[in-house]
Length: 77
Image 1 (spheres, rainbow, N blue to C red):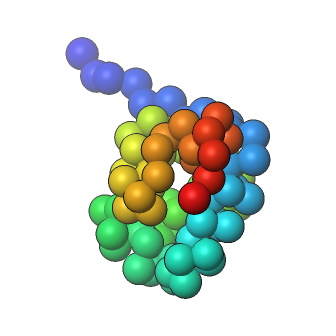
Image 2: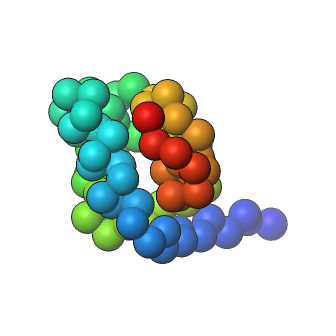
């Protein structure tokens, strides 16, 4: 049985992610590499605010913030 992967829309995610990335002076290439995702995947998240739980977790870890902060549920650093 295959596990279905669902992308969810997270309101404001694109803006928060871009703010965190630029605030740390990271290019898309550097952040994508640190997170272990592709540059097109990162660009998609930054443009459409949609991501899987796994992608959110990888990005949060790479940025040194919690998944809740990326989702807008906590204070951003």
